[in-house]
Length: 337
Image 1 (cartoon, one colour):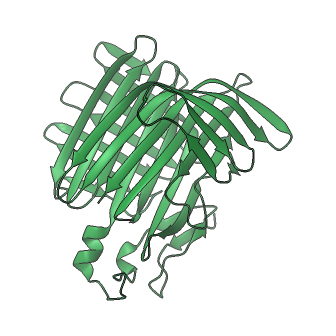
Image 2 (cartoon, rainbow, N blue to C red; image 1 turned 90 degrees about the vertical axis):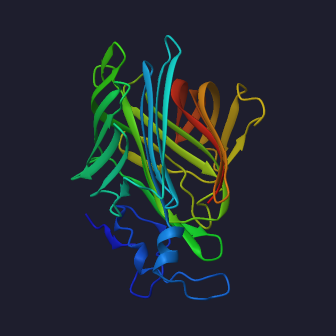
Image 3 (cartoon, rainbow, N blue to C red; image 1 turned 90 degrees about the horizontal axis):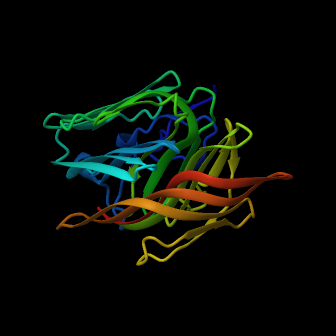
């Protein structure tokens, strides 16, 4: 596999574009980071301006799970939530660590570990040889183990400019087979038995100091048995390139710019996501959400992640795929960091 070894070249600059097999190491320490007025910035600035996060979702019509580790250097955060559509049961757990204590995210998207701990709560994500292992152990008794097999699926991997001097590398995948278990209260759920599918988001870079994005993601099984995955975004990571794609089984199909139409102040109203190339034309109906508002001295976040169902049409070549009652996510996020 012809994977690009490092993102930052010998000239201290990031490589921009799409990478068919991803990037081995996001070696941000080698980047020639400068101020907007071209003043060279040192190791301390390189460290504290660099942000990383990983998000993993496990999706089936019977269970929705979201897990994230976010390292903003001045602070780190993690969250876990679980939603059962049938009973509409929802549990959420959020944690924060000042100065990113007990938090680490390796720089190798496909061969590294991410870890977060707060008291007796631990989250780890370990990637190696095409597989990603998620382990969550919470004081509440929630216990999640999931092995995600990415070995046959092409990732969406891209790097784009962010502001005047920054860049963002993101690597995503969706509708990936997984196996494992979720212990949640009295429930012990076998992920393979409920045909859960996983999505993975690995993102890092020198992001805009103030930014926003809208995001849509889906992992679903079609009536004919094929797996359909999707990642759509607007407002971020689209300076010359986009992170918009669908997956049909393990085949990656690139998608053009996407228009998100929704009412921010009516959280139960439908979203409309439509791509400029006509591939995607979907409605999203929220069924639940995770919200967070933080307005501190150094950082701010106005975050709403909905989980719900998609309906509509996706065009792949001459085929028109009907999307009916497929579970996924829609997100509206403002951030200052």
